[in-house]
Image (cartoon, rainbow, N blue to C red; front, top):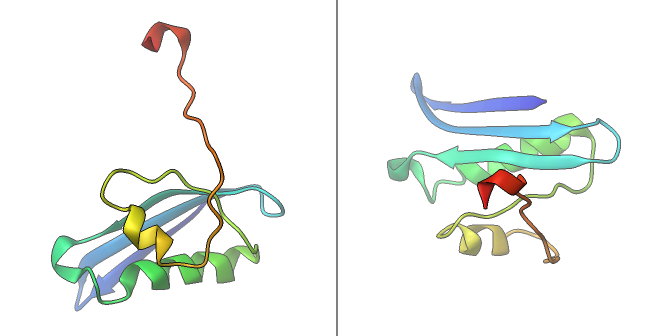
Length: 90
């Protein structure tokens, strides 16, 4: 797991978490940027730093409503995906 925090004058303005095996699999499990800090390049910087530190060339993610435009602005390929649930989750 790689976890990063972005700070601005001592205030946390963003965070990212990458789950990876260190060689093939990389899953962006968390990317958050404070509402008043969005548009300042914090998200792309956090993602770039995760790539740099992991040494990998791709990462997978599931996008929540409202964040699709952000991810589409980055170099990407869209692939079909599924979110699986335990049978008891209905």
